[in-house]
Image (cartoon, rainbow over all chains, first blue to last red):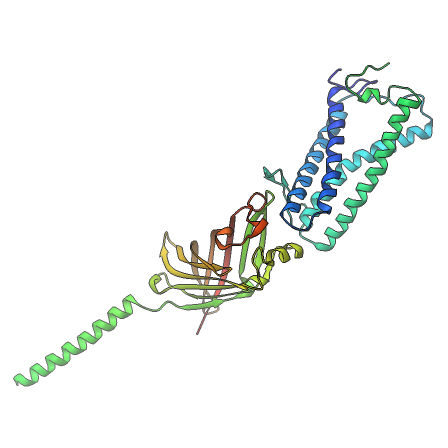
Length: 184
Length: 201
C-alpha cells in the first residue's frame, strides 16, 4: 500500500488518520457515557480529564489530516453515483470534517467557560479560549451534545453508504479505505 | 555651698537617667503602625492542580489585622482570618464540593486562621513571616515569603503587602476519604495575596 493517496485509493497515512480517529471518537462516546453515570467526585474528574485529552488529540489529528489531504490527490467518487448521491456524499464528508473540528473546539470552550482548564494527559495545559461565563457554558454544552447526535446520524449514513457500495454495488469504495486489501 | 552642689548633681543625674531611658526606649521600640484590610482593593487567592490543569479560586471575605514596621519587626504581627464559605472558583458545583465534609467541611470549620510568630527581613523590602496556619482546626507552622511597602496616599500611610504561601492540603486534612488521593488533585496548594492596608487610629 502506498504511503500517499492516488486518484483511486487512499494511502497508508490517510487510512491511519481515518481509522485512528474512528477509534478515538468511539472512545469519546464510551467515556462520555461513563462520566454521565458517575456522581460528582474524583472518579468523574478523572474520566472527564481523559475525555478532554482524547478530544484534543482528535483535534490535532484533524488538523494534520486536513493538511495531508491538501497535499495529496483525493480518490474520486465512483462514477456510478447519481447526481444527488454525489451531493449527499459531499455533504456527509464536509459535515464529518466540520464535526472533527467543532466538537473538540466546543468542548475546549466549554471547559474554559466553566473555569476547568484543559490539560493534555497531564503533560501540558492548554490556554483558556473564553472567559468564565456560566450561560455561555450552558449554550456550549448544548452545542457539544447536539453535535454528538449529528455525528451519530452522519457517521451512520457514512457507514451505511460504505456498506452499500461494498455489498450491494460491489465496488471498491470501502476497500480503498481498508488496509491489506486489493482494489479491483 | 557644698549641699547645693550635691543637690544640683543629684537632680542632673536623675534627669540624665530619665532622658537616657526615654531615648533608649524610643530608639528600640517605637511601636509599629497598625493597619486593617481594605477589602475592596485586596485579593486573596488560592491555586491548585486538577487533572493536570492549574485552577484558581479566591476568598471574598477575610480580615487582616497587621502591625508592621521594618524598624521594629520584633513587634510586627500579621493576623488573618478567612471565611472559608466565601471561596469562589468560578464554578458553583466545584465550590460546593470544596465545602463538603471531605474537603473544607465548612459547617464544622468555618474559618481558617494565620497568625505570625516571627517576621524576619530577607532582602530589601522582602520578609519571611513565620507563623501558624490553622485549617480544619489543624495548626501547622508555615513560612510565608512576602513584601511590604508603604505609600503615602492622600496623607495616609498605606501598606501594601504581597506574598505566596506554599502549603500541602493533606497536612490540614483537606482531603478525606477519596480526596486523600493526589493523582487528580495533588497535595500542593499555593495561597497568594495582595493586600491593601489602611492605617488604624
